Image (tube, rainbow, N blue to C red; front, side, top):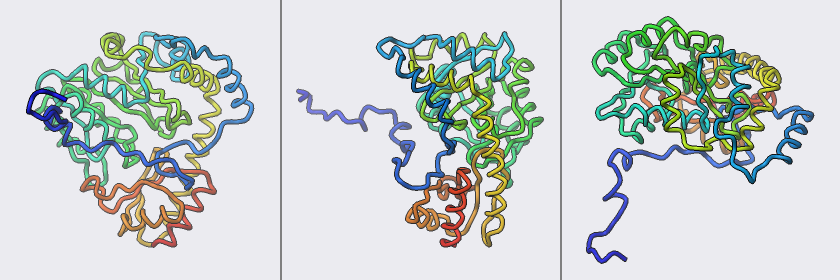
Length: 360
């Protein structure tokens, strides 16, 4: 016990913006139909699972992983079609990459700018890194309010801008020409977050060589590797060489490197599953649109945002019926009475619809 009469507590020592945060909540797994986390609902083919089992059985888990993860980077470059001069930085999912970017650019007074509602980790990690966060509201239809964004860029001079493409939790794909205007107007770095690239009709990967301040971030979590936690950032080597200095050694372990490399060798299998999810997305949206009192929003992701009166009550009743989705009601003024449902298997989606009907 300290000889000082002063009591040492977190409230005394932690930064006030950290004390003010709420932790990112992830509900524990349970035996429910799980449609809350944008996961791929399909298992791997048995032959591929067997190959992975052999790979894991002989993995050198007693050794540190390849710190540069060259094998995995080669597979990423192959399936993504990145130009040879484009660099790759690997992260533990995309969350770690967001944190690396924020830490690197967090000069005193630096601003991180994004739109709202969007991925909550942009705002949270800005607080972690000590950056000032500016959130620009989207238009009522969740499209970009380009005038407001450009005005904020001019006023705030952000060091870092994040734009999710498609956006989470709204699901829509922003206007590409508007994003290009934002990139051109921004004095700092613009990161286009393509976590849902496999379900979308457009990408900024091909535009990387057109802008000095553009970086593209992806994760493989939504494609079927959520348990591996592998993400990457692509862009000019001039940027990534500097960002590499902040990446902790061995941040991607032996098993994630091995298994992700193997899965990317069979990228077409995962893309076929993504095609099944996209087809099911169309069917699920049609079913939801046929329900009285339910309004859905366009989606180019593997989830659908819907608005329904009494969303909080409905979320709780669905959970009691064994269906777990995501309640966004209360999370942002633009998301009042909104729920987000991941596109599951046809059977899971049918059970969700039946449970939802019973709750309306």
